[in-house]
Length: 470
Length: 100
Image (tube, rainbow over all chains, first blue to last red; front, side, top):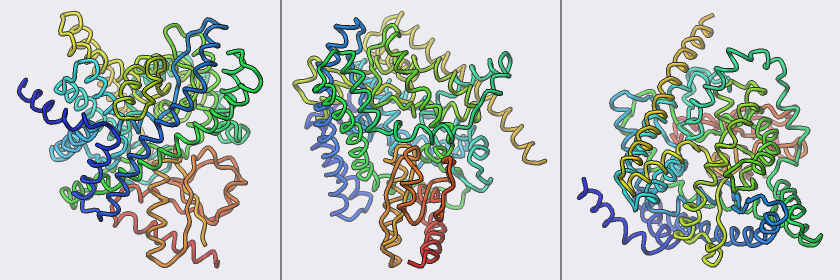
């Protein structure tokens, strides 16, 4: 096994040493060519990823540069240590796609999908190639803490990968119910969002047994969203959080305005630039889909896409809107938290899972969300060092800032998986009995909870099928 | 020019795939189509009134009545031509129905 690890390291190290944007420009262009994309389009994709990486770096520089003095003032005047800048999901996704290891983890997961389909262990064909970045973060975290132990990283990615495919099948009947899909509609998802379901299910069970009356206080989600209007949009969030930081950081009026508008600009630009590199990954996604669907021609399966087919349910947004100010208050008082929510304050990394588990019960979503957001904030804090260093390596972070500033995503999907990745990575970095026990315990608890959750979902699926018969 | 609105979770991934696929296929079929991609939660009555056709993944509950034709475009995301063709056919019907 050591030989395999050292071979992989020898193979990947020289590629990585070239640095982020140029490497990914070359790699993605070549990959698209292998996928038989026209040369000009392949080149277009490669350039788009490179400029997205470069652009993210520039805007992260603007945002952290503007917020750093105010956040330091904030720490001074309040004594609350919230110094990590929350840039939201788009920069994290771009940074992850800027690492060549993401392509390696993608290859592992494609092979896993083919094997599981062939063995009838899953019925999901995953075509959501872009979202492989979530598991890649997990793998990269293991590598970061284990001095690049590729074997352990691959193990954890495959382990969670298997559970994700099983989960996608388990959730399919609930998806049909939630968005009124006929049985013939193959839509499902393997998104890491939904690996939070087992924990949400524990709380949901407590509500079932002890607090079922709470559902009487549910309200109409769409009406609430309509009332909130533009206040939930990216530029508005950037603006009023700029004002919030500015006032608590005791800045002058001019600086407060400047912070507000800079915040608005940066949040809009992050997601705008995010769309560039998604276009860059597109030929790869199409190529892999063609390859897989050809292999399984004639077989009926569910197709895994990104989660927003559920975004039509207003509860996802209503819960996220209500939870945003709650998270801000929690961030101020949560011991061990160093993240001030900004780019990730609309908790899309959590509310889709709450929707699936509670099946749209608003009060349950809000209460479980309130109780669980601290886990996301702590995971956001825990990965900040890794996220900042990785951003620096792939050329998406201004070098001068890295000494003093850190970035993260406050509501990144899969918070529990981040802690497990750190436990596995730390074992890889220092193989002591204590670290081994921590790693094995976390994996056993994680798996045990999933097995219980799977049983609950199977019961639910039988009920849903019976309801359909009537 | 036909203006189409696509929407998804972040207005970045799924809706952009739908936007590009629709613009490419409709131009192949000889229509001038311009699509925009937004976050579902940013959709307002005012925003949607500026478009001719709405192409969500599945029809959302936005809290008001949507008065333009809706063509559900989810199957485009499967990236399998046989499955996305009916979406483009429906969209073509909707475009013809506009009499623009």
